Length: 361
Figure 1 (cartoon, rainbow, N blue to C red):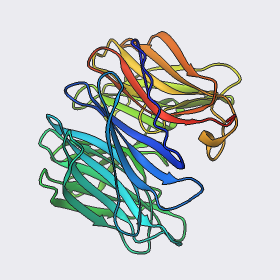
Figure 2: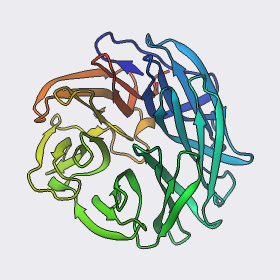
Figure 3: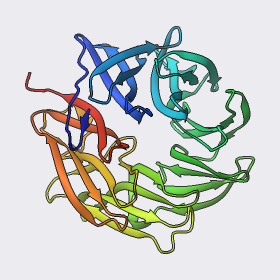
Figure 4: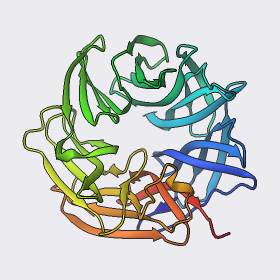
């Protein structure tokens, strides 16, 4: 984990264990909560969900591992809900072939990393879990997607709404495919929004989760996506922008959640290399005139880019509200760095988290 400006670095390195980070949030006192998963080296299964806490100076405070019995468990998101209370979303499945019998698990967590209420949502027993994502609304409800892979290799999604007591309000299995949503939002009581990372489209759902509209993301941008809402109906987006075999990071501001009229767009990248957006979310701000954008510079275009013997860098950009790039910063180059997540912090800086593969040692 790196912090811009004061620039501290924390490396979580446990002997004989691999750790991966996927999500991060800042507490009201400046503490940092990082979530992901861990596994014993040279073991494919079972993963355990992982949360660790750092103080404002980047010093380790505490950590927890948790799982369901006989399950592979991976933490997807930490969502702040009130003061220093959080909702933690994990997905799970069997750790023996064919890796089915899965679903998602949601826990409440306080600032001391104590887990309380829990809800477990089971998918059909024949499905392989592909991934999960969620968001919370101003009323405390959660809107969650669970993507599953059927035996015939088609990806579908469950959409579920859950209230603040972790009670399921409604759910629907979306059977047309492919469906896997990296970002979600409840616009109002009758309108739900999802960003389908497999079709690169915005999709609109009504109050019963019927699809009522689809719209291609502008500028031929593709996943991985990052999204930051600047109002209830407008947002900034980060994506991969590949034109003429140049792999850049593209970023846009869209004034309406569905209608693409009047959007702003810019892109950034170096020649003869791959600059790729942060894996789970790489765009954030506290003030729209200081937008932070992050990704991986010189990323190998491979199935497992974070495990290749290639030097890479975390790259951070700052733009104004019109997406003009002010500056760029690079961190790394002495190992394989893969950026997973970026957040803007209350002190005007940002934090980035990812993995580091030291292939030379």
